[in-house]
Length: 127
Image (cartoon, rainbow, N blue to C red):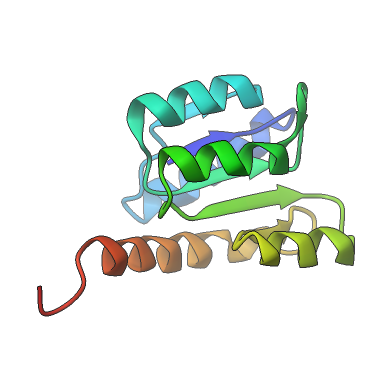
């Protein structure tokens, strides 16, 4: 999993602890979108967690590049922007979006769903 988190390093620490409790490992962390793309290209993570706003732009701009590198890896976007526009746009891109202030407790469940989905895509039952 790659976490491309902007400012809230302490929040990222809590998320890392939650994931560790579930035997999910955050293997990489990037500060900018460019760093994230480089790490995604190199390591091909199962699940990607992006902050909506990055120092070098909006994380949604990275989605086409990410999809070219790893088309089936689920992407979860974290934001404090509760805009319905972003939610609808993310749904069109097949991206989950969570409001960091109100919905962060749903992150672990989304990651588990995402991992199950990627396993079904890569290893469909009966094959």
